[in-house]
Amino acid sequence: MAGDTIVRAGQCHCGAVRFEATLSDGFNSIRRCTCSYCRMRGAVVAMVAMGGIKILRGEEALTSYRFHTGVVQHFFCSRCGIYTHHQRRSNQNLHAVNVACLDRISPFDFLEVPVMDGVNHTNDTGKPTRRAGTLRFTPAD
Image (cartoon, rainbow, N blue to C red; front, side, top):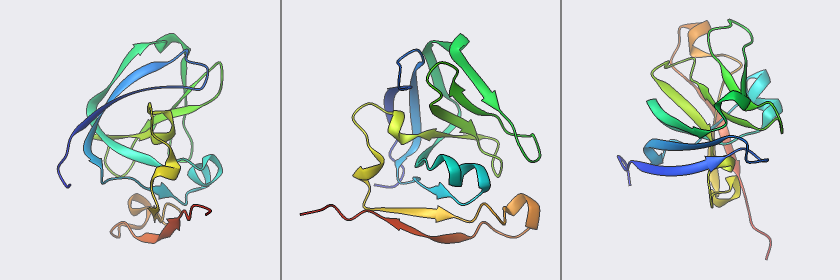
């Protein structure tokens, strides 16, 4: 349902970083992106309002990476290397959290995931965000 706020706990692979995320619109906001970094990382993300990620433990293990314009930080565990979340470039009032890090959630739980055109990012083109396609998961029989 649209407008559903969901609070989920999550962690990196090794468990050094544990957090809680308040998903602004539940899982209605899931997506992937085609930018060079997201394409290589392959994560499915869900949106979290600014202040909606609470680090419960391991803040000292988190490190960040910036690229291209250097505006946005992408956070990951310095021990296991798993990406946990990042600040959105197109809307810096939002974070995106890696759904695979959320307890009892898998990116394969979503049969269809919208893929956004990050190669032609709205902040670079001045045009509205464009949907590049849809990633579909078809479970085997």
